[in-house]
Each structure stands twice: as structure tokens, then as C-alpha cells.
Image (tube, rainbow, N blue to C red; front, top):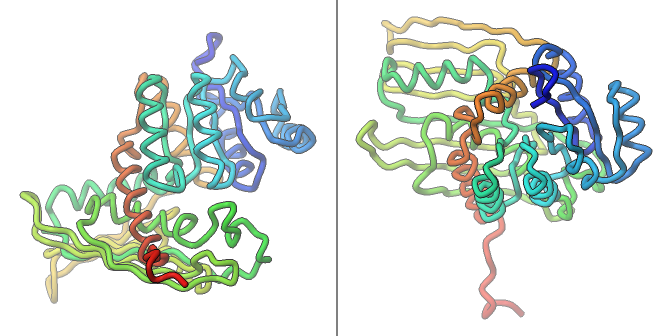
Length: 341
């Protein structure tokens, strides 16, 4: 942390759209954070980004950014395929790291990063802004309290009709494109918040012309535990249909519904069933683009000396990574060598 005040000093790794949005939200939190440097593989892009966001220093490599002694935490906003390498670079340099979702492209890589953060004693968090939103946190508390009864089923979706060029990162297999890692991570995290990791997953999907999955769905099943009976969940993501971002948790004595669980401004809580049910709508507001909750949670963790956030714990990021692996495997099943031509 900065010695002259209590503000957390941030570095921004990569200069794409999401980096700009989060940097603008960082600028709203003047009493708790400041952006001191930006790094890109192109010095021109870094300098342009620095001018646009009034950042003091710009670097033409990620290594230079990671080596800056005045940075407390780095936000890794590069493409999915780069997350492991860049996050590892920063962790090895002793920098706390917030990595844009998904944390990595596989459970094996996610476990590697988590192990490294633990060994180095350095903070690491997956940038799942939805899990830091107060309404989603309140929903988890309400369901966890048991006041709505036991969870029996949950649904979550996120999708839109993408009409961009085939070279876009969303459709580029070399950049770990595809609907599941870019969009499906949200429904999986949304369901994980309420039910944890599934015991079984049955999924399917269809492919874009580039070979990445463009649409995918899955049915998740959960065995009984000491806290609840068996449950099921359905998830879907798409680059071919406007699915919105809906989440619904259906319990034996009520339900919770979000029409937009990525950045919810309101949620509907239904208590009771049949003719006896009553609805309550809870609302919240946020400054900027909605990333301030996520940023403030990182700042809080660093001030408290915590290595992981209780809102996006390592165990959940790893569980989600395993679920994403299983979902991808259901769309791209391995080919038996003996069956190949």
C-alpha cells in the first residue's frame, strides 16, 4: 500500500475495452484507490491509454509493469489465453492480482495460479463483478438462511447475437474464444453461489465456423447433503441468441429472480407458494459502470491482509473452472484414437 496515504495503487495490464471501463470506475474511488501505471505490449497503446485516463506512467511491456515498485495490485485485462502467463508474472513479482474472468482457461491452470498465490502469500481474485454486487450477495444470504425452504432447481442464462467478424476474440480459438469461457462463466458462477459444484453435468452445444462453441446448454445435478435435498440446475450461454442474463432460484417455499444478474439493479423475492405467495422487490444503485463493488472488495482485502476474497474465494473459482472444463468436454468430447481414420 502507498506509504503517503491509505489508497491502493493500481496498475492496468492491457488496454482493451474492459480495461477502460474498470479504470473509469477506479477513478470514482478517489479516497481509496489510484491508478499509477498501465502496461501494454505496445508502448504507443499504453501511452494513449495513459493520456486518456490521466495515468502517470505507461510501459511497453507487461514485465515492466509488474516490476514497478509503486504498484500494489495489477488488474489483468488481457485475452483469456494470456491470463495464466500475465497473472503468474505479476504474482512472481509480488503484486496482488485481480484477473478478469475466467481466471484461466482450465481447472489445471486455475489450480496452478491459486497454488502460486498461496506459496507467495500474495492476493489473487477472479474478477467476477456479479458476485460482489450487494443484491446478489443478499440473495445468497436469504436462500442460505432457509427462509425460502430448500433449493430444488435453479436456472441461469447469458447470451446475445454476436454479428462481429470471425477474427474477433470471441470466435478465435487461439485466444480461447467461444461462448462457454466468455459468457457461460457467469451462469456457472451464479449457480455455484447457491448450490456449489455439481455432481454431474450433461451438456451439449453447437459450433461456429471457426470451431469454437457458439451456443451451449447443460443440466447440472446435485446430490443430497446434510443441508438440503437433491437439486438440479439448467444453464445456457450463446453467441447466437439474445438470451439476456436471467437467474432464478426456485425453493420449496419461495424463489428469487433476477432479470439481469450480471449487474442487477433489482431482484424479486417470492415468499410462499400458490395463493399464499407474496412478492418483494429489492433495489440497489451503483456509481459508474458497476465495477466499483469489485474494486472496493479488492481494496478491502488488501487493507485487511487477506490473500483471497470471501466473495470470490479460490475454492469457488476452482470449482467453477472444473465445471467449465466438464461443459467444454460435453461439447468437444475426446476422440478415441482407435476410431480415427
